[in-house]
Figure (spheres, rainbow, N blue to C red):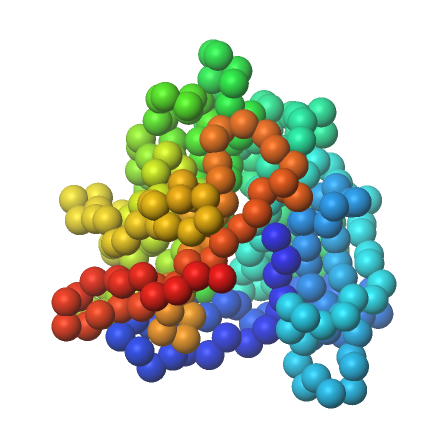
Length: 302
């Protein structure tokens, strides 16, 4: 996963995007880099863990983009201690959170620590275990995954994570957690849902909802979140589906993003086993909100 420190404006459509936190980690500037022209990545093919990438100013770009040329790559020695990583999010203080995810094998990712959230301190730049969640390892030992989804709500300081630890291809035992980052307190959880892609934004009625991409089917569900960060489980509902769409027709939502009035779902094949990321082609599915029918409608893919 690659994360750029870019400003994301609030759109004026039916839904309302929650923009990412804007405070950069202090350590980036202390290392001699321009925070605006850097990006964090956990998906570099030749490097395990987290890396900081310097983006090259071409003279034409006013702000960096995903197409910006890459320059120097920096990695603190502590950024490899969790093995390979998946999602990256940043809080309002500039701290960076990430979750472990094995790639081709579990040699560099301890199965017992796959439900541990890691944090890079905004001041020191050092990564350490931040919070370990219950890890119900599968007796069959066929599922190498634990935490696979992560999202952050800058309006409340709440971190959302999903885990499929203990699930098998035929048993759904996943958990979704709501965690207050200031206190490390687990506010709430949802049991029995295996989910990968997660994100949070306000729906057309102004209700904050967590969007959830299931790992067994191509369905995207959502659940309202109250002011204290608890899930209103009685109102869990299906929003849309990528089932039967795209070149593979059986993608699962790896990432979900709402921006500029569109719901963008990044789908990949997922079968509870390890496969090199280079062998997992992605497809992005675009949905728009039909305010008259009050539902998401598939528009395009790329």
